[in-house]
Structures are given as C-alpha cells and as structure tokens.
Image (cartoon, rainbow, N blue to C red; front, side):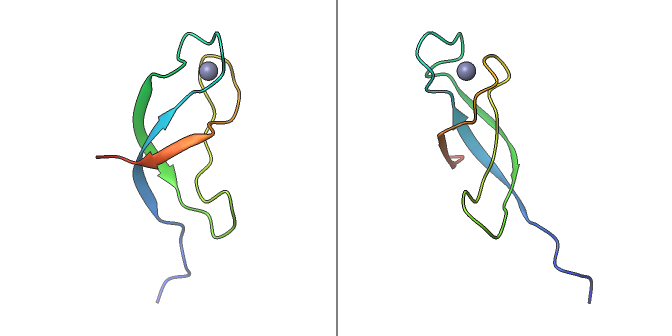
Length: 58
Ligand SMILES: [Zn+2]
C-alpha cells in the first residue's frame, strides 16, 4: 500500500472579493483535498485572496 495521498477533486471556485475582475466568475480547477479544514484551498489569480466559495464542480 502506498502512503495516503491527498485526493484531487474538480471544484468550482468563485472569487467573492468586491471589485475583483473575477468576482462571481466561477473557475473549474483541480483542488487538493486536505484532511483538515478548509478542505479545499485556492487563491484567486486576479486579487490573490483565498477563495471562500469552493463547491464540487457540476
Ligand atoms: Zn479575486
């Protein structure tokens, strides 16, 4: 058995920073699932703030 590796899931991440060019624009990307919250971690490529809205990709 291999050591436990973090799983990677396709997630829909949306920036919610007011005024950001990417505000409200969802982006589907692979996110690593960490064992501790927040389970998925991503940062907006535009404003650099952590995504607060990450949901499973449809
Ligand atoms: Zn942003």
